[in-house]
Image (tube, rainbow, N blue to C red):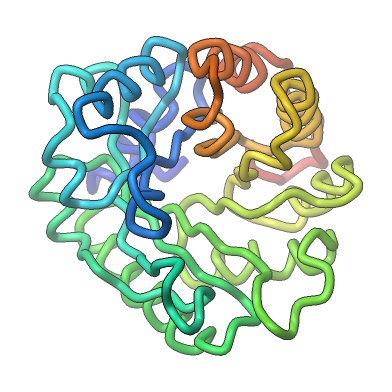
Amino acid sequence: MTSRSDGTALRLARLARHTEGRYLFVPMDHSVADGPIVAARRFNGLVRTAVAGGADAIVVHKGRAATVDPALLRDCALIVHLSASTAHATDTDAKVLVGSVEEAVQLGADAVSVHVNIGSDTEKQQLADLSAVAHSARRWGMPLLAMIYPRGPRITDPHDAALLSHVVNVAADLGATLVKTTWAAPLERLADVVESCPIPVLVAGGPRKGDTALAEFAAGAIGAGCAGLAVGRSFFESTTPASVIRTLSAAVHQAPRAVLPAGLHR
């Protein structure tokens, strides 16, 4: 964790409010890409379920953030997502910036996030956007979560551990505070990804194969040394979201820490 007194350390502490150095994020920004995840009148109830179950933060776009009941964010951090695309685009791997760090500060956010697809046709612009947001985030003392994936026409195996090690280090080198990526196959190879990276690595929710499989996936990811999970669809598409979030919270916040080589982050 940074020792700077510029607000970054305070905001990072809010992002890991249940267990120091451990993060359970619930992305709920999917309505831009795919359409509503739940009826508007039920959105705050879904957030309430996430918070009650042990989520450390929710991830939403700037407009949606303004609709969240502020009382719900007393016990949960707010991450404002700055990237967007829709399922109707000619290139669904392309991402554009639709918000700024300054807007996130005005909304009271604890962090911002940016999506980058390595291997996409628009990789060059997405990398430039990540770098620009990192510069602004440092100026405002705002943690930056890079959601970075091997995704595009030149990617043959998005779950290759060596490739994942490359993409998470791209995020670190361009100034991200935290990085989220997809899982490795086999899952235990996530340990290689974590060992390669100087910033905390979070893993996306994994293949959706039921609550038992999700619990095993979460335990495996944390056991491999990941600093946390970022799980959206497996939570809000579940018929038992309260049970899902409690299971994920137990995996993230109660599991013993993996032993990593000396000098690596926790």
